[in-house]
Image 1 (cartoon, helix red, strand yellow):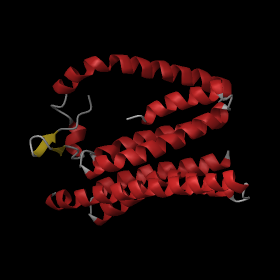
Image 2 (cartoon, each protein chain N blue to C red):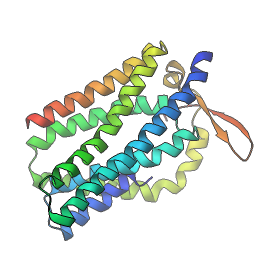
Image 3 (tube, each protein chain N blue to C red):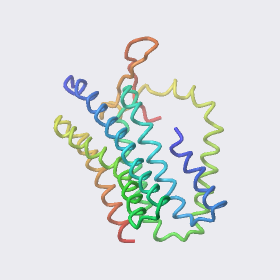
Image 4 (cartoon, rainbow over the protein chains, first blue to last red):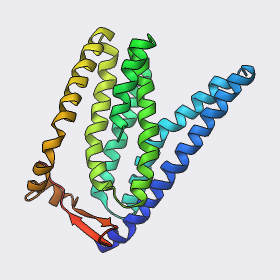
Amino acid sequence: MSANRELEPSLERLLASVLYYGTWLASAVIAVGLAMALIGGHPWAMRVVTAGILLLILLPVIRVTLMLIVFVRERDYRFGAIAAVVLAFIVLGFVLGART
Amino acid sequence: MLGMASGIFIVPALTVFGHVDIRIAIGASIVSVIACSCSSAAPYLRERLTNIRLALVLETATTLGALTGVLLAGIIPAMYLYVLFAIILLVSAQQMFARRGERAMLAIAGDESSWGDRLQLHAAYPDRALARDIPYRASAS
């Protein structure tokens, strides 16, 4: 477990940066889209906004994926499995949601 | 902290004052919840105040709940969603009022917990005032 104790803070820092910069990037994309809509009603404006919202929705998915990768690399297979289960629920939700 | 609360405020605001369809209002509130929780999680992670293992274990329940929501949203008519949302508002209001007495419970809980042991969820958080790590135990109660 001593290896885990040393690796975990770096995983926390990694997740923190992903969420921090990811939120900024998604917000910036949405802001650009809204600005495009406000200025001249650009045909792509709403697509840019949608892309920003999609990025925002994907952030937690990226976070779980990163956790899965790090836990498996760390040979912490129990938590790798838990992350895989969470990811499977998310993917299943996306697939079922897209159908209806 | 306003993760759930932003949904509590946004959904009624959009449906009552904006006359938006409740499904779209719930969707909008969820996007705002993601934005709030992602941006506020970063500093907590950086300060090592988040138990990411415990978060992942709890996330199995939240994603399963989301999956149930996906399956039910297509079946349940919007009318029942209003009723369901009203019940959730009442429950969360009751929880907000009840929170004052909760601290004593938290102090007592935390002795035996097989799940916390099995998954090694016990961790430590850094205390700035004491300038050292404070260990704690994860418990189901």
